Image 1 (cartoon, rainbow, N blue to C red):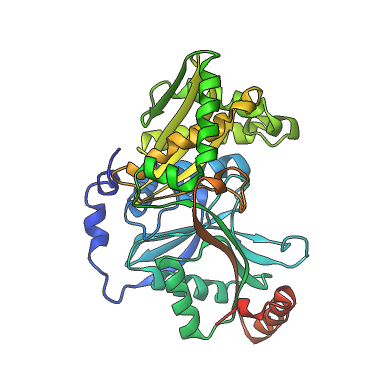
Image 2: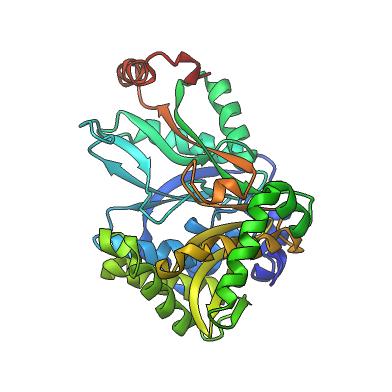
Length: 391
């Protein structure tokens, strides 16, 4: 696995390593299709290598396949943040006519069903410059939007800290309108020590029993791969395995739609080519019965997609696979792993003990009348939770 510096094009880290003094900063919306150009993607990848917080879902190898699949008409714009003419930040954004179930126009980060984080890519050290430029742009070009909405935002780290500082210095009204705690793996424990501390002795004994019973059916093996060896076959197996279960029946499996099938294939191939992909597979007599694709984005990682064969549910193959996934604790470049799971997930929440706060933020933009209307909307949305208003 290449380090973050090794993943950067030559000179990229040197460019962003030194603080920029009073940079000329601006944001401009561009057609995402210009990044189909290899040279433009090279600049994008250089930004990724020095971003203050990792977000694989906004890296070139993932976001471009998602846009090709879900936005062929180009309604999404990429906000290109430039400092002294160099790409220093990126955020996909769209003008939406509705705010969830209400007919209220908004400017919002573009999020699709398989995107699990909305943090912009911003060069480290330029976070406050980014937020000032973004809010200035939104003030000048709000269109019909009543406010700016930032979903799936991490509520700790340099991006959130910088945003809070900018909101405070501008005395700009904003609201944390939703928050959830999702499972995170972060510990100084070894994998074995963590497993023992996380699960009761009774539960560990039950998993040992299930593994023994599964082994009676055939040879149980585990494969862990970070490269692209046999990747096409692995993707085929994953899509088939996921579709064979309840997601296939509900029409929510990746293979249920050509758009998500194509996106998954392109994204995993891109992740592998960038040194971002880890695949974990639990096999029974050489056939996969549980699979996990994770994105490696040092210092973090993201558990992207998992599937298991429901015919073997009595043996808990998904849990057995997650037991092996605790090896991420021993990865030399990874300090934490985001589960990408919904809050209160019935399986992962019982294994991973740490939590990551993820929220939705709504921010005032434009002139006095627009901001006054937003204040009333925010008051109605927060209801009896005025502590959600900031500052």
